[in-house]
Length: 627
Ligand code: WT7
Image (cartoon, rainbow, N blue to C red; front, side, top):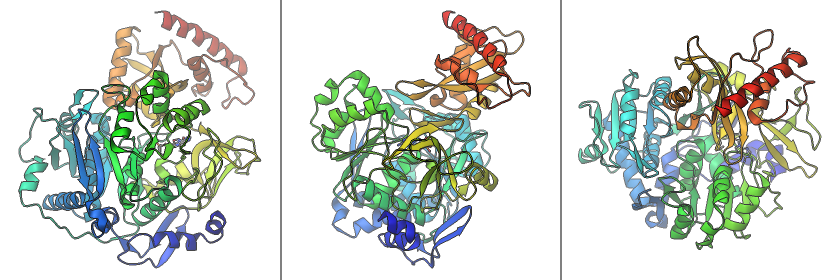
């Protein structure tokens, strides 16, 4: 299958594409004008048709589409016909608010069924959704709304997290005050608490429903290359970039890879524990499992609330067959001990998945023994927001293969991955290098929204003709791929992606801060931890109170995932003569490591200078700690 996909990629992907419903078949499988790939051009289809209409025409109309579990114990079960009805009614509501094909709609919502329903409703009318993770701050919401020019944002009065209410509507109000394009806010009632209201701008979802929302909205038959969504993710510079995914290629790719990797079927109960606000949620909660007619579990709250065994309770309750989660979560549960999963019947599980960061062999073994009970293969899926779907992963849906804990194994059919050196030369087994993809694939992003130049630079300039992933990897003697973390200034905090540049620009806007450098240090649970080195403006004194203020400032500017783990106040930053901050020195101090090999010092600082800076900083950081 792999060989066929490499020798005849267009024939291969055309066969896959026939598994979906097309209103009009494509004229051309692939239009490849580097760096832009356009798949199934001339073809027309609709994403909501793949995910709901196709199922309600069969026996699946009465089967479960969504098992929803609120953090507070509330539950809702939606059949495919219920979901179909809601998608149509929400689409009608959007139309009544004047939303048309090509309009951008922002979603800032808790994990409730209305979130996937609204995504599908947008897709139904050809509107482009941009989901904003509900842990992001008002500033982050505003940046994304501004960048897309969305006229409408959909939110809820609040959402539950660890027993507390997150005031989503208030955060949206704050964002809206500096978003001139925003005309309307749809509010879904979730918590029922009192919220500020702006008559004329704000509208309850329920009132749109009462207002004769239609039960059928004709799906807009969009071009295969029509954008399905924009999703922001962090890069190495500046603000997050809006990754644009198309319709035909994205759906074909995801439909296929979920069969190969998860062996997903209409009778599967599939639970991806990610938030819909990340790409994992887009592909693994909404588009892929629903396109297969499977049942998804959607859980609103924290993994350890009200007790450490909440997840195992959910698996038992709904008979989950496939669990897809992150190494960070596994390491967290590992720390609490196996007695928590042991209390539960997990025999429904057939397959386990891991995503977001490299999984260390200890966590892999723990997951395999204590959750899969040595019966379930683990698929370690490597992919990115940009790739739309899985790229390197075991494929038990195709055939059984030996796994190696910590390796994502092999590229999927159609994926031409390679590990190269700085000059783009393929490396022999056992050598660490850069991971690149040499052929376009259907899930590949269409562009960076509004910034084609950045698209070109970020992905295609480093190794011309190939897609640069930003990851280090190594291939072993058996051809297995080992993913070795980011090769750029992007951190993975609990599997969530954030750029050091973004954190630095957020920190520098704090009034007391003169200069800042952000580096990561390894964290046993979260993967990466955020460490700040800060010099203060004249007259400012280092203090714990100031640390708290800076932390709060980052939470307000970016969101809770940006909370620093450590802040060091320093007199001066170690710099090269040309003024470049010596990050390696900072990283070594932050990680409590030695400075290591300096023979390839990336900047022109002398070895002596770097060493001196390292010793100075170590002293300061120790003093900082004692204080
Ligand atoms: C980065 C992409 C794609 C879903 C969630 C993350 C890291 C992702 C793995 C894995 C090792 C992984 C990479 C990648 N990553 N999956 N199985 N093994 N590393 O999406 O936020 O776009 O992050 O996550 O570093 O580049 P994302």
